[in-house]
Length: 265
Image (tube, helix red, strand yellow):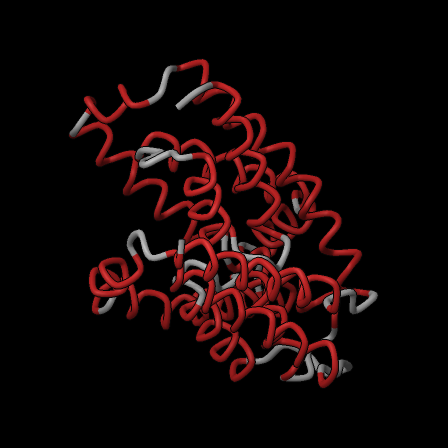
């Protein structure tokens, strides 16, 4: 992979991790358009780690307050411990999919741009539905956390946006817009960090996988993913408050049609 390709794919990863357009789907489309057969495990590690770091930077105050609140005695620590419980509950559907279905799903979508296209069309429909039917005013609870987690589990398929599906689910369940976006971005940190740790373990066991990309390309991809992820995360928070999903719904529909068209050529 050339240096400019690494930077471009890093930007794509950072932007699409938080904007409701599917990062995995766009990475697959980007590789198809650039003619890159395999980005490599090392690329996955650095860009996912960089986007996770951008989330930590944007929500550093929330994370600091949450961690501090976990150790406060009595009623003072209840809000933080409850929110942490919501995050843990939201991870259950994703964990079940990862353990029992991930290999089959990866085999089904591997190299299939048409499947990515259909998933993007599903994302477009979900975003449009949330734009038209989403309401707010309610608070996050155990039921909402579980169903938002189910939406995150569905988003393991390339082309289905994680942020788009989780925020849309929260809005359709009546969760306040700001709380929906905050929970969506914080709930993904443990899965991303866990997946990155497993990928690092694989790299340690198979160091030859590092040879696919040069250190300069890896560093450039990481910086590009961090900066674009930081911008996209802040932008998405503002868009959720304005219910600015319609444009992304149109974009995902067009990208899905493009993907299906590419698969037919």
